[in-house]
Image (cartoon, rainbow, N blue to C red; front, side, top):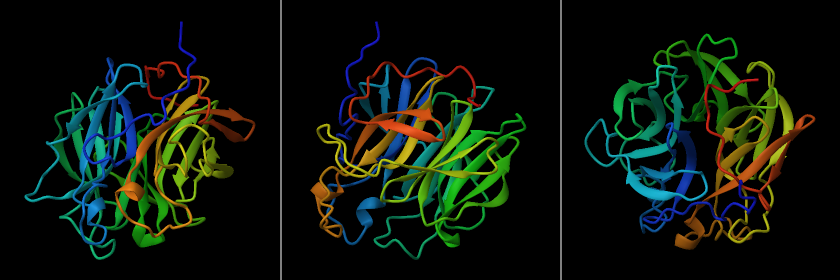
Length: 318
């Protein structure tokens, strides 16, 4: 009988640097894998160097509830030195090959501005050993936060990403084979944002984007035209360690509901947004349940009657 106990809060904490952000969750047929930006929240460094020089952390779970830290991916570097990896996105192709699209910055900058951001492509057969397939040519050299979903007609895939050179808006590109991408242009330009994530639920497509004060929601029937559909994760939960705004999310969708993985800064004081230090930098991964009602998403991150995550059998779609 499935457990109806609430999901743990927090769902996951990184045991090395206490800074898991930008989670993505993937199933390999036997267990769940969580990949995330391993921010160095405990490091004393100039400026914003603590959010650079980051590796991709890995945790695994048999049910999506209890997670075991497994280390970091050591097969991603393709040039010498300590470099920065952010916000992985992973999809599984019909031939069983996993494809990762990860944001990359050379070195360990101590400022946000002044350096390129690119999205790199890797492939793997086991989610642990990755082969570099090259950079993805997109609309600028300041792009991060890829999200990939199959197209409704089965002709290929669409990638959404943040283009910081074009207003920090969401742009899109299409591919027939997950290797060569053709830029389509801007998708969402309502205000600056990041971390687009697209999923199918209840006969429609949904997109959530991180606006830093919560997540804006959009809906679509064809992945082309997007209609505003409210906001989520912009308030405070009541469970222990689940306070604050929910950031950069990934969604695992089932037939009747979806599970959204996101991160929060539980020690951040909203009255002092510029405060800094390990307590304010610390992040945790949280889990909430999504259902749709009419033209909106309903989010429950306080009770979350939890059972094992739905194991995907094919690419989702309406």
